[in-house]
Image (cartoon, rainbow, N blue to C red; front, top):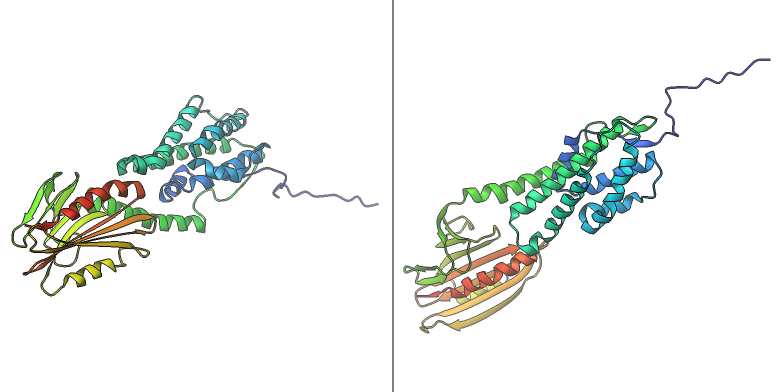
Amino acid sequence: MEEEIEIKDETASDTSLPRVRQPRPAWQESVLFVLSFTLLTSFWLVGRVRDLKAVGNIDFTPWLWFFVPFIPLAQIIGLPRFFDELKRREDGSTTRQWKSYTWAWIAVLVVTNIIVLTEDSLNLPEWVLEASLIIICGLFALLHIRFNNWKHKLEKVEFYGKASGYYWYEWLVVVLGSIVFIAYIYFYVLAPLFIDKIQDLEDRQVIENSDLGFGLTIAGDGWVEVEAGTHSSDETELELSGPTLGSFFIVFDQGLSNSLNGVASGRATLRNDFSGSPVCKENRYLSNNEKSVISYTECNGSWLDEKVTTYSTIIISNDRTVELYGYLMDSKHKHARQSENMRTIAKSFSPL
């Protein structure tokens, strides 16, 4: 009688082993965090919860952790449990533990997230938001290093995924994120450095032009007179840059060929400054010396998720038509604070 001998392939993968994501270099994860503006920290945290759940059964629901990186209350409630579970698994390995640093990590994450969520309403400088986002990326990079150290000590697990490099969808984040990141650096960091500034303007400072016969009064701080052509490709008589990148005023000499109705209706029906149909209101009145007619038009709308307002004050007299055109685009809270100053400047535009 022949005896059957079963030959087992020792190289075959044991499907009963817990499957854990391959440890990947922290710098590669950091690139994804930065170029996604911290958005991919949510996917990363879901993946690490799955790793913990695979090694030891816990009652965590991975997809719920997707929201933790952006909700401070969820961080305060959930992250202590998360770190407790990680510590229990580290106790069985030689991984160096964070000890008291864990609470510092949670506290810094909570504070920086509160700053990110309230930066607009608190009118904080842009650099505070940028620094907070960088700190959040750094925190998750440190936590990724901790997970890597733990994974390198694991035994009897099956690693899956890439040990280095990116998947196609991650490369998509890298490419698109790089474009957005470079554009942000150019428009918000580099471009302001190359503006041809003529003079800084103070609150309540009066600007007059005797040749064109107009004057206006500055309202608020942070206004700068800049070279013609900074904000428009057309011929301009005066250009002012506001305290934010999305705020400026331009003075146009419309000559005698443009009537009040023509210029006013052109501004009121302008659509290029808005992503939808703006709501416009016009008011016409005589100047104090009753020698000129003044038209003031204000249009409110939006561009994507930003609030936009345009201001147009037109002075028409016997010898010429002069227009002050203003533009403001900013987030809701910052727009509300800046719009009143720009409205004051626009309405101060008057004949000498």
